[in-house]
Image (tube, rainbow, N blue to C red; front, side, top):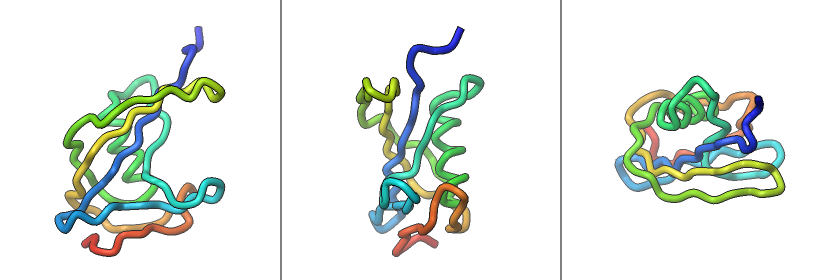
Length: 104
């Protein structure tokens, strides 16, 4: 049986100077990194994977910020605060640009 809602996670990723990591997607423009959590992973593992895939940045999840429901898209979206701990900024098939003014 398929889930009735998908679960997503987005991260507000800060570097050591308080700068926020943003990615530019092809459809929605500039946004926080994140995506759908796979059924076999924890939310924390999923957001770490999504940020790495989209930006090349390794993160440590700091705390939960909130949750909202997109009824039209059948998604429960969670928001997390994270800090950058490594990696190399790079684009991906999901990010055309990365705004990382003080990242590494």
